[in-house]
Image 1: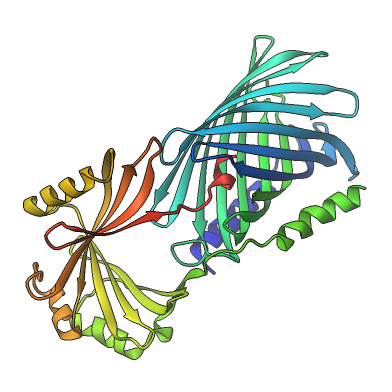
Image 2: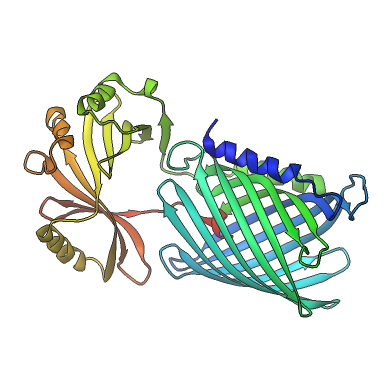
Length: 229
Length: 187
C-alpha cells in the first residue's frame, strides 16, 4: 500500500475516532457539489458551482439523536477569475444560499496560487466573503486554505488514475462584533477521469464555536465533481 | 427528484470523456525493468536509490530511471528493450558563453523570461554514456543539448515553455508546456 494512501486513511481514522460527543454539538451530513469551469480567453475564465447540504444527524451536547435525513440548503455561485501570473488568479463573484425558509447573499473575493513541486502540487487560497441575510446580522469572513495534491502512482497524475488531496482551511468570522474561528480538515480521494473531468470523495471535517466554548463538530461526506467545458 | 440528482452526481462525470492526447507515466518495480537497462545501471556503480518509471505515449513505450547522484538529479531513458537513449542531468549553472548566446536568442522571442529549470542532455552510444558517471564534462565526446524550462512572456500573459538549445546555446526547438488543470485546487 503506498505511503500516501496510508497517510490518508490515518487522517480519516483520527477524524472519526476523536471522542467529541460529550462536550459539543455534532452534525453529520452529505455535501455534494458540481463545479463547472469555462475558459473565456487566455486571461479570463468563469466558475459555476452548485453545492447542497443534507443532514443525517444533528446532536446537541450530551444528547443522543437518531439518524434522520433532512435537507438543509443549496448554494449557487458564479465566480469570474483573472489570471495574474503563471499560476495565480484573482477571483470575484456572488453566491446565493437558498434554505427552506430564507435566502442569503454572499459576495466573494479570492486570490489563488498553485505551485508545482516535483511530484506534488501545493495550492494557497486567500479569500474574503461578506454574507447578507435580511433576518440575521451580516457576517464578514477572512479565510486561508492550503491544499496538497499528489499521485498515488508515479510522479504525475494520469487519466483514469486515483490521487490524494488534502485541504486545511482557517476561517475567521466577525458577526455583530463577535469573533469566531472555524478550522476545516478535508482529506479526499480523487479520480482523474481526464484532465478536465475529476471526481473527489472524502470527509470535510469542520470545528467551530470553540472560542465561545460551544464547540460544534461537523462531518460532511464530500462528493465533488469538477468539469471544465 | 432527489434520487435523480444523486444518481446524476455519480454517473454523469463518467459519461463525459474528452478526446485527449494519450500519455501516461507509471511507477514500475525492478522486476519489470528490461535486463539490459538494469545491467547499464549496475555498470555505472551508482549506489543511489533508483526509481523506475514506464512512460507510454503515441510514440511508444520508454523506461526511465530517476535518481540523485553527487547532489544532482539524473534521469536515464531506455527504449522498451532496455537500450539506453539518453541521460539528463539537472544543473544550476551554464557556461558563460553558452548563457550569453541563449539570452540573445531568447531576447528575440520573448518580451521577458525567467529560467525555471536547466537540464543537460547527453545522447550517444552506451559505452560512451557510461562515462558520464566517471567524468564531469563529457560534452566533447557526446551529443550535448540543453533543455530549459522557461516562464516566458510573448504577449501579456506568461506561459511555460520547454526550449532546447545546442551545446553552443543556439535555439533548436521551442514547445509550449500545457499545465495540468488545477480547478480542483483553486475552487
